[in-house]
Length: 359
Ligand code: SER
Image (tube, rainbow, N blue to C red):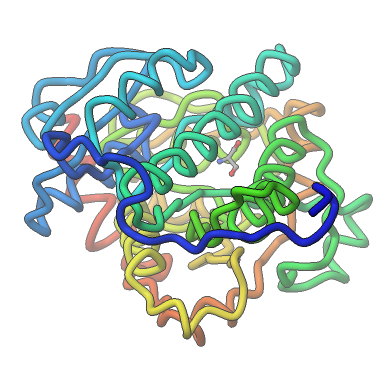
């Protein structure tokens, strides 16, 4: 048979290679020291998950380390780190969170590409190699972003309303380009990886993705994002610091609380595959303007000093993002139901925890 004829493809059966039975089964989290990683590790710990292996470029704080089975310091761009993981663990699930966010990426776009795309490619490859070695499909959970969208003008943004997954995919940032391409790569690895190879193994990866809106955590501050004005405003108010918001008062994008963000990742991961009609889902909870956020912050912290000093370049990025996301597919397919609307996010989550943090 010529190599161009349909190859005798293999189906995944356990095991294809000696699995090295002494490797322990693990769930891998990359970017574990970041905001979402912080929330996800604690959510998994609270659910009694004991086999989390955390990877980050920096040492994790003690509390997080104690919540993991193993923590590794290493760079996702360094293939030898990933080979070490392959040798040490049978990874059945990957939450690939490591990325350079949209503001930071604009200062070093090629480095951002290396980390956001090169790193993701390494992880997808690791997942495929893992699946081949232990004979089980690897679940690959990937947070994408509102940054994959690009609306050309404020009028277009206002007209667009709640944007659905397949519309307006014209990102203006390197981060948005990277996330959109990685969604496509995930789909490729899940459905077509090595599709012409004689020894192709089908169905190595179960790739699932959410597109996050801006996230607000009570426990951490984001670094290098363009939706950071919302969490920065709340944290500054609680800390008693003045805050100059870098977007206009009328700026509107969707947000959600960190507990809802991590719960959503876990809910998507747990959903029966037969319920999923897509690989990539929008999710969001509330869409206040920056001025409305200020009003709410002032209700809880009446002495807060919040002014608006728009940075035109960052404003341009936020203006290209939708004011709202259509997340009906996530609600229908896997029961996405955030517990915090804007009021509850402040009253039940942000304000009590942030007050305690800064008191
Ligand atoms: N929070 C991200 C950023 O601002 C967008 O998803 O870059």
